[in-house]
Image 1: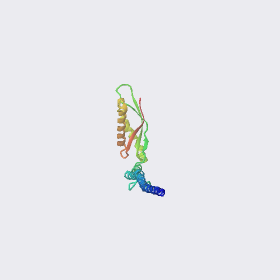
Image 2: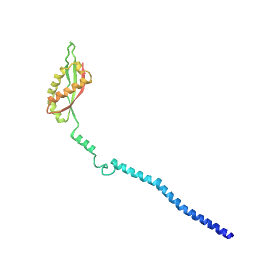
Image 3: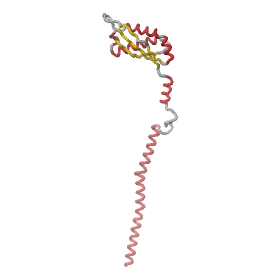
Image 4: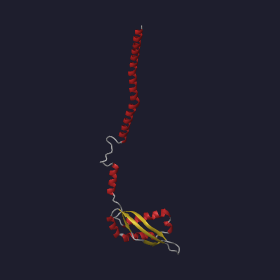
Length: 186
């Protein structure tokens, strides 16, 4: 019987080993599924989501930016620079006029103006017309009163009127702006 016990004990242990052996592969399969479920699957979803986001944002695919090909904004900016060269400025001589007043006290206006033009060629044409432009400015400025020059609105109106007059006096040439370098009322 002792032999049976020995035999039984090893048999029982073999049965226990078989039972444990059956459980080990099942635990291994569960551990593999757990790794796939909690590590590999989220990593794959994260990569796929990032790729989809990059594609729809234009970083990937047919609309991806190419460093060799300029963007439409860069092309438009280059065309604008080529179409509009930097402006040229023509300085007119100082203009001193007596403002219109009702009292005995005389009030003078000293004006120093620059004209903004598109090209240096127009500057040569405007220099030839400078006496006509200065005359046009003086006729207008002599009719002003001190109250007409009060505040920024008054100065703005004077600038707009001078721009209108200079464009009328130098008709083939287009002056884009009149810039005050000095405006002194005394």
